[in-house]
Amino acid sequence: MLSSDTSGIYRSWNMSIPQITKPSKLYNLEPIGIGTPYVESLTSYICRLAEAHSVRTGTLVLEEIIPHIPKHYSVRNGKVLYNNSGAINSCGEEASSKGTIIKILQDLCQRKDLSLLTMSNWKNFISLNSLHYTNRRWCPFCFEEWQTKQTTLYEPLLWKIKCLDLCPIHISLLVEKCGNKYCNKTNKHLGGNISIGFSEHCNGWLGIDTDNKENLKFNIKDQTNQGEFICSNLVQLIPIPQKQSGVKIKHILRRNILFLKEKINNQNLGDEIKKVRILLNNFLTSRSNLSLDSLLFICSTFGITISQLLDQEVQKVSLSNYCVTNEKKRINKKETY
Ligand SMILES: [Zn+2]
Ligand SMILES: [Zn+2]
Image (tube, rainbow, N blue to C red; front, top):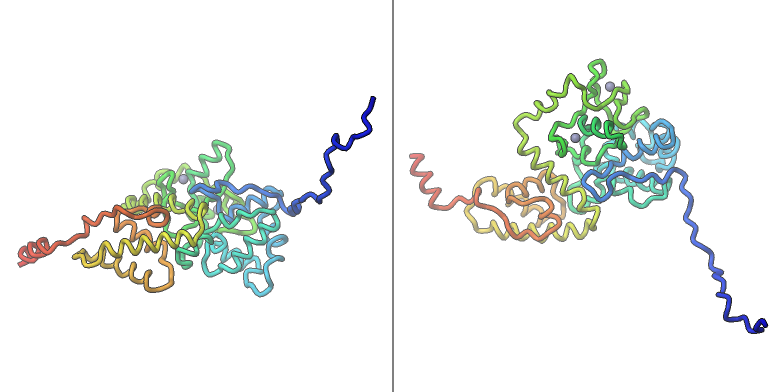
């Protein structure tokens, strides 16, 4: 026999309107390497996005990006945008238009993480000027390896940083001219016919040119030590702003620079560290950020890493190479006479 009281059997209906995410106009393409030192650059992402849609990079740029750039920006013209395309990956003079391009792409792809493919998150603690290299550069060994392993070809943000000359993986020079001797041209970071791993002008493969393989290693000159120092520090730098805010990093940097300044105050030190003292004083007395080169110079002088300077408490610094005691000075003076 059925009970007449059925009120306890059925759950009440949820009448609220479900949240439906806005569909993206372009593919919600996953960027490569987020959270790692080898995160993809934004210009590389644009090229891969065009490829995913089976259109030329130029078609995507001219039909989907440029129409959304506000009319008063000069980069609304394709040629001007390509000529300034290095700035899309950085936070240089074109910061405002670059910021716009991040926003346009995030709207088109319905993603929130595309600023991580640029240096724009560094603007709170590194000077905006001269961060990016003007031309497109690449490591032929990386391209060759990725091609052999059939993994996705892309251009890491690291390759876009001006002060980096070596690939941190292969310790070989980054290349900026097409290896095809009939072409031998440089490329901009973005161009109508650009596709990852290939020359914009002759469509030649940018991986290892077997004729030049040895030259690439020999060209490293005698700057390997400094080059490796820069590589290892930039590899540490890139993930830091991906995991914490620029304001927090600036706070840590300021505290560490105060500590370093105290450490060298009233000490009789060599000329090199006197240059650092000027840098530290300028940073503390002005509101402007230091350049990446200056931060690396501070690290090398104090024997610390950029990760320690920006992300941790600097406690151990080595000044032994720079201390000039009065005794040493006296001896040097006697020897001179
Ligand atoms: Zn490489
Ligand atoms: Zn070429």
